[in-house]
Length: 147
Image (cartoon, rainbow, N blue to C red; front, side, top):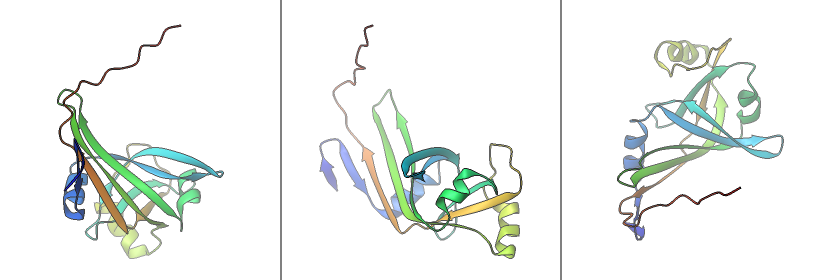
């Protein structure tokens, strides 16, 4: 389905398939009443929720536990001017079940940052939307900054 020239909406299954191919995304949340975006590595769970691994004392855990957040992942090719973007929106919760926590320590995402006291955050895939940039015929020019 085409939204407008050059963009195509993707269904949930296609969005999740593409997300599974990338390692880094961005969690979008509110920090001190302001929008915040944090790049993180992640994994998709079998139920399509997004899993993040962080430190127990991180600002992220305090800011997102129990609230609705967005998570965005994408891939773009500047040469062909093509790519895709997927957004997952849902409630984020800290995994507190000891059995699930132990399982995720073995099978869950590995953080690229040093972690003290591993905590996993699960973002429910309540809403999954995505768009593919399919045909951008005109070149993208960067604005010239003069000083």
